[in-house]
Image (tube, rainbow, N blue to C red; front, side, top):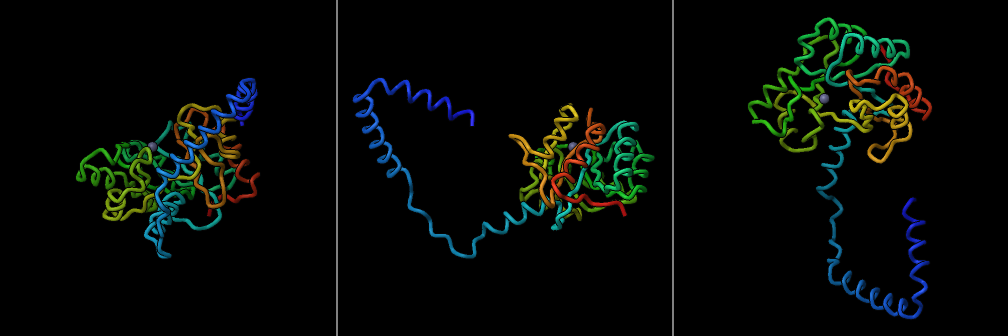
Length: 254
Ligand SMILES: [Zn+2]
């Protein structure tokens, strides 16, 4: 939108050159069409049953954490202080919203009380590796160890694996690692970027309207947040209201 007035202004200024400009434009457009003709290959003939379809479907399933329904998931990654986690749990309980937590295994091991509170409250607990390594940058042996030690075995555990940073989530290597450890890869559709310290109002706005980086929440969407975001707890009531304001339903507590 911002580009349009600038371009209009420029072409008005160039209009003063008159016939010379017209001649130049003619030459330019001739050259351009020649270039396009030279560069554009003939359109490939794609058979009806294309192999492109399956990866696209798998990508969508991973993004939606294998939940094909219209309801929206809120997810909370990594770990946080007892105050941060309890605040998130309080809001979720008050709003009767069920979330998926993806704690780092090392954090879960150090916070058994919080992990059992999360499970006892009725939330799901997935795997986010033992200490948040980029699974695409370690050996296969180390990656398998990281995933196996990312399982908390706590009440509420589900077999979803969220790779740290989302890295490699759609790669054959991670798909193989996930299968061998009994997991399903799970990423997200809405990136709140709460971990950057964004103010609560910004987090809420991203969920409701999206921005240059993330689309807004839609049916079946998965919203990523972090237990240790500076303003995540403060934003949470607004995030829940934003999802509902779009006419969408969040997963409810059992
Ligand atoms: Zn993380």
